[in-house]
Length: 154
Length: 154
Image 1: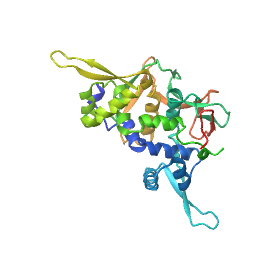
Image 2: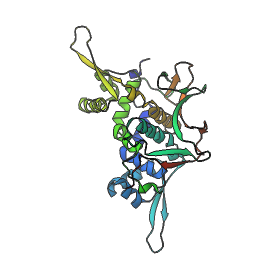
Image 3: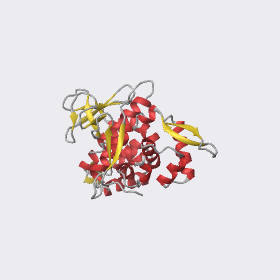
Image 4: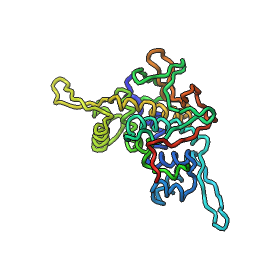
């Protein structure tokens, strides 16, 4: 079957990019992974307008990727911080794959800006394509795509 | 060091989303991976306007992710098809991670729409986080991020 005979929208990539196919959303998620949780800290770090950040966070909360929590510094009014839900944390593989891509293809002369480490052992973490038979796919390895029950013919 | 003390733009995720942080770009790349290469076939499959597709393909060519090639069907004028470059093919891990996310969190009652298979052995392929010590990280495993030479203090 040719792939263009299948409905473009009945696709897990299409559904995932409805959630995260936006530059600001990805950068907000990155900062949440890195422990930047407070609205003002996110706004300052990202250089994003208040309105855009408010909208992106509301979308992430509505999608179940982020939870909003109240906190109150002594003497201040209540403010909010944002924490990844388990579903949000599952995007770690996507973000690490983007980071690996940027490290390989887009880094400046100083090299990679960051390293993700496995907390248990300290070794660097990267996103790999691994098949269920245990092969770690390299760039020259080829893949094919097979429609399953969730596919829809156009 | 707190992550919000580092320049948000000197980051491989930020650089990668400059390239692929757009819903249409990801869907065009997906179709190119799946062998849909011709302008009219892409346009028809994605339901995208001619202008938007032209702009996204031009951006992908300028970024070195896609190569434009001429072809001519018998009796027709020359047309163009689009092929991933090696740098474009390296986005396979990103797209597979998005697909895995969508399969897990966003699939309908019919289940996953597609399966990616390792052509050599036929087994399903997924994106995994693997550390250089060989541990296959699960969702409960924790990671930390360490700045390297490419990071910039704000």
